[in-house]
Amino acid sequence: MSSNLRCPACSRTYSSGVDEPWRCECGNPLELEAGPLPDGPPPVFSELDTCRGLWAFSEFIPISRRATLGEGFTPLVSAPDWDAEFKLEYVFPTGSFKDRGATTTLSRAVELGVERVVEDSSGNAGAAIATYAARAGITAEIYVPAGVKASKVAAIERAGGEVVQVEGSRKAVTEACIKAVERGEGWYASHAWNPAFFAGTQTVAFEIAAQRDWNPPDAVVLPLGHGTLFLGAYRGFRALENAGWIDSVPRLLGAQAKGYAPIADSLHGETEGENDVADGIQIREPVRDEEIHEAISETDGGAIAVSQKDTERELDRLHRAGFYTEPTCAVAPAALREYRDRGVIEGNDDVVVPLTGSGLKAEWS
Image (tube, rainbow, N blue to C red; front, side):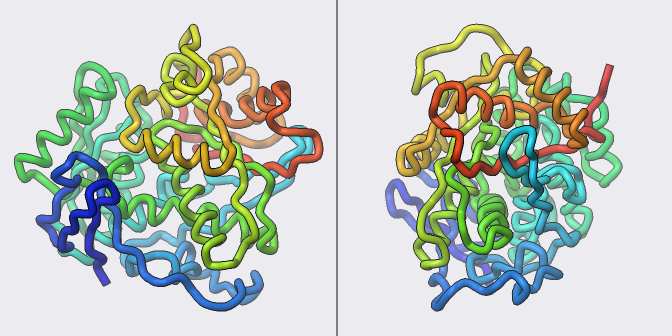
């Protein structure tokens, strides 16, 4: 079932295979060739085969189900203190939403006959890729920053992943990983570059819509680093709209960390300060910058930068309300408060906020 690859920027196409390129010759990310959208109305929730996890929506996923741990259909629960609904992405097998992309990426690796994958990550994506590689019987090498949390290194190593710690910036980690890929040391299972990852993260939109009887919310507020969940949500809601399963795409509102907020800064001007606790979204040069801006424009969305103080305050509120998340998760509900203060979200707007990583993965002082 392996789909071929195409470049939306220059229209080049590439045949699928172990030796397929990790990006186009023109330098842009590649996409999987999509199949036809399903005909007819959406199924009622009770008709969905939720035992198949993400592949309950197989009509939208151009990859066969081959490396899975039963992920999918995370709870959508009321959060009255925030006047919103929270999508509990932190209950996935490895404790973060990255499992959505890892299951589809490693399933495609199995389809292609890949024996070794390489990835760069600040923690959660690396743990997810290593875990699903173990499930698939594929070797994984994960490049991480030298200062990454020990708990995340342990999660990778305990799944059999080989950890390569790189001194310097997050960009330096990516550059070291890409050099390894270009030396032929493995298939690039990148959560930022590999299109199979987004085939998985788009399912967050399918689940939100299905859990709400195909009535999308007015807005979804999401953490925004490389944009893997943000763009996944955009692609998923857009696919549902094109299939006629929903009437409109929600506004997509991003939450970035101060000091690492290129999208928000481009929209509102550069902000002062840094947010060191939101380490999961400390990305200064998102691979899919243009696509993120397009998603914001097309949905009348936005992006703002959240301070460390506001993140820590919101994290405490989450924990006291029973939502045991890691610090990066708190930027989205903190941003929800700010969007309301700015009048971007009005009092009667219907809002969903994904909580993306488990507090069990964090190291608390």
